[in-house]
Each structure stands twice: as C-alpha cells, then as structure tokens.
Amino acid sequence: MSGYDGSRRNDDARFATRVHDDRQGMRVVDEEPYAGPPVMPAPGRDQNGNIEITTGQKMLSAVSGSLFTSLIVTPLDVVRVRLQSQPNPSIHAAVTNLTRTATVEGFGALPPNLGVTACCREVFFAGNAIEYCVAGPDIGTLRPANAMGAIDCSMEETQRRTFNSTLDAFRKISRNEGITTLWRGLSPTLVMTVPANIIYFTGYDWLRFAPASPVNRLFHDSYAPLVAGAFARVVAAFVVSPIEMFKTRMQASHGAITGGGGHFTKTLNSVREMTKTSGYTSLWRGLTLTLWRDVPFSGIYWWGYETVRGQLTDARERARGREFDRDGPPSRQRSRSQSRENHRNTFTDSFTAGAVSGAVASILTMPFDVGKTRQQILKDRVGATGGALAPEHLSMPRFLMHIFREEGVPGLWRGWAARTMKVAPACAIMISCYEVGKRMSRVFNEKAEEKRASGL
Image (cartoon, rainbow, N blue to C red; front, side, top):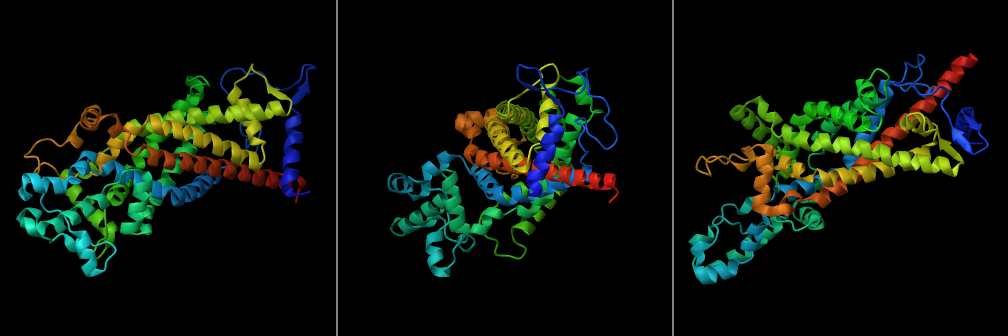
C-alpha cells in the first residue's frame, strides 16, 4: 500500500471516530456543541484537533505558489497593462483615414512626428526599428508627391502600437518586440508577490481561523471571509505599492532600448525623477485606487472561494453518505473535513473554487483596475495642457467618471478579458499551491509527531 493511500486511510479512521449512526443516515457531529467563538485549542493543535501548521510552513507554501503563479500569468499582466494604457481607440480610427485626410484636407492637417518604421526596417534590418525612425521628417513638411509612402509607414506604426483585443496584443507584442517582452517586469513581480502573498495568505489564515482573531469574535461566520480578506489585503497592498508602481511602469514601456541599461534602468530613472519632483509619497500614487480595487476584490474572492469550496465539500460528503450537523458553524465542520482530504481532492477543490471566485471578483472590480493602471503610468501633462489639471490627478470617483464620459462603459472595462484570463488562473494556481502545501506540511508534522510518540 502506498504512503498516499495509507495516509488517506488513517485520516478516514480518525475522521470516523467523529461519526455516529443516528439511524437516519450518517452525520458528522462536533465532539462538543457549538457555544459561540472557538475556544483555545490544545498546544500544538488547531481548532479542529489537527497537528498545527507552523507559520514558516505557511510562508513556504505561499512562496511556492507565488513562483508558479508569476511565471504563468506575467504575460497576461503585460497585455492587460498595454491594453489599459494605450490611447483612446478613437485615435486609431482617425489615423486609419490618413490617406483620405491628406487628399481632402491637405498634408498640413495630418498629425506631425509620425514614425516611418516600415521604411526604416528595410534599411536597418531590425525587427523593431522604432528608435531608428524618430528622426524621420514630419509628414507636414513633405510635398504631396513624396508623402504617400510616409503615410503608409505612419499608418503601419500606429497599427503596430494599437491593440484591438487580447489575442491581437499577444501577437503584436511577440512579433514586434520579441516574445521575452511578455515576461517584462517578472523580477519586480516576484519581489512584489512573494512578500505580498506571505502577508496576505498567512494574515488571512490568522484572521479567519485563529481563536484569538477579532474577526471571529465580532463577525458572523457567513461574513468572516469577506472581512478577513479585506483586512489582509489592506496590509499587503500598502507594503508592496511602491514595487507595483515600478512594475506597472516597466510593463507599460514600449519597444526596445538602444542605450545601456534597458527598460529596467529607464524605469528606475523615471521613478527617481518622479520622487524628486513629487516626493516619496508619489511611490504610493494610485494606492487609493489599488485599495478600491483590491479590498472589494479580496472580500468577494474569499467569500466566493469559501462558498464554492464549501459546496464542493458538502457534495463530496453527501456522496460518502455523510451530512454536516447544522447546529454548529458550517465553516468549522467543513474545515475539519477539508483538512482530512487527500492531496488530489484538496488540489481539485481549491483550484476550482479559486478560479470561479477569482473570475467573478475580477470582472466586478475591473473599473478600479483601469483607473489604478492609468494613474500609475501618469506622465507629466501639465506643460502639454497649458497648466490644466491632468485627468489622472482627479479623485478616484471623478477620474472614473471622466473615463466613462470620454470612452463610455467599454473604457471602464478595457482589458477585462486579459485581466480575467490572468486573475482566474492566478487565483486558482496560487490558492491550490497554498492549500496543497499546507496539506503536505500537515502530513509531515503528523508523521513527525507519530515518531516522537513512538520514541523513534
């Protein structure tokens, strides 16, 4: 018999001691009736009587989940940032009519300083020749007889920089900038996600399940996931906000850098200039919008995750001929059942619940993600607007209202497909790695306890 089967049978044997036949069917019953908030467990045991998982083991589970998640979903994050930060689609529609504009209104009416990348690419034999072409002549200075080629090149440049959909962005970024561009910002992503997820997941576990947690004392069991998730996210978001600012700016940069240092150095220099001009508090620019996005996201996500996983647990127990006693808190009884599941069921349930709840929360909080992204890649527009206040400087509600007036509802949900494609698998991978990691740690601790008890 494999160690996996033996562990599962031992778990079932221990679980069966809490089951009795009431001659109406099998029911899972607490050893003690529920009497308000959970009491302090025995030393080394959690509230379900299981061997306790250490904080270090939870952190290790969070780190492993962060690594897998970042490698898989960073390309989707790059596409999301590009879609949200590109100019209004109406600009693209106007440029596609360049030939008609030149013919009817004259070449002086064409936008100046448009690149001629197609022509330059043939000269320099470069896959991405944008930097070689910035010194090209303005279209407005060309004679009509010589300008048609520049118009074609300008149209091509605009089309290369404009993404019509998520798949279109994948294709154009890979072809024009190289496939490694899709992993741009991976280093700051890892630097950001590892500490953030350690704080977030271990903090949620403590707020949600620790007997000393104020959440368990002050909130009903049905609302505890929402409150615990929101509080854990506030702390994590504040800690990593400067790193996310750097990552977002780096991912939003286009093309290749011909000088030394690459995009990392360019982004670092721009952040330094920003702090000199606006102070170090500018590193937390967009934090309010981040909290507006992440706090409701986390509340919705954890509430949905525990709801979906709870339903999966209930269905599995009913299939085994068992039913939870409804006199006590369902979450505690489900948690006990989930802690006894094997690795496969733990992974399947947590992956499914994480993907479903992550997708729903992502779509509902999409407008705040759009606003956050645009604030964090804010350029200095004061000079260009004659001293007028840039829209990104407005308060969060007014800024989102500005986007709604200028671009309508689609503007508030721009990039929703890319974000959902990123968030759903990211949530699924992260939470399943975390839960399986905790399950493996519990098995390891139980075996170590058995060895100590037997004197080996």
